Length: 315
Image 1: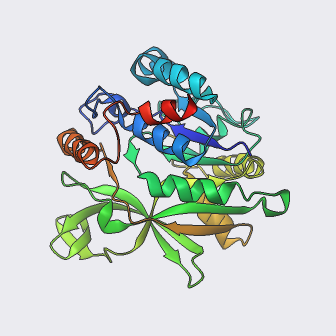
Image 2 (image 1 turned 60 degrees about the vertical axis):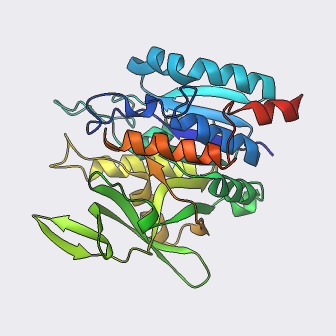
Image 3 (image 1 turned 135 degrees about the vertical axis):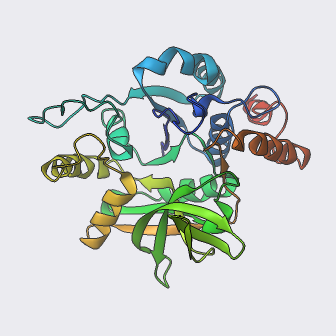
């Protein structure tokens, strides 16, 4: 069965010194975090890659990774495509609010792929490292897809304490999970920081403890093509309730999935992973991430010639 990896890479990280954080080199050969995610996805069995980017970073993106991936994936028989998240890509009849300059969030980003997805797919952030286990589990879930299971989704469940930055606060979707391992709710929680007790929410200098062993969503979802029309309907509903938030409001994938959960329209299996997340949220995170990949290479998790193992198998 064809399974697609959708990589959301349209955002420029405002907290990352104004640079394009997704394109920061972290590997010994200039690899970026996406290289490792793509390697792990291909190793797990995904056979199509879709990048969501903005048109104004198209050339920089292709220079940093796109051209290289097209060449490698071509040798492996894997399709590579691009979708463009556009501020003006709005539901019919919706006018672009005056003064709006930023795209509409991760829900809109996935909708940019709607013409290119006819198969089950995983969605990830470009600037997050997820680890091999999560890709294997999501792929194995997706290949069980049938039309009768079109609203059965999954997500990689990371442990909160394994996803915090040493250099500042982060936002995570803290999850409620039932005894059967299914998601019952997601609460988007900002200002999460490392704490001597594990984790806390920090607001106005005051810290409130949070269970550091909670499951969190890192925007790594396993979804079906039937989800996309419902996502488009949700985007129209989003604009009906936008009043007062025209310049900053975002249509976020975890929040919409939670709405569907509460309405009883879908199920989401939480696939527990013990892998440690890392990513480049802040400029200061970069050295930590470089060191983490260096250690993974020393431990034999990856080769210095990252895709060499997959190309050798193909040969």
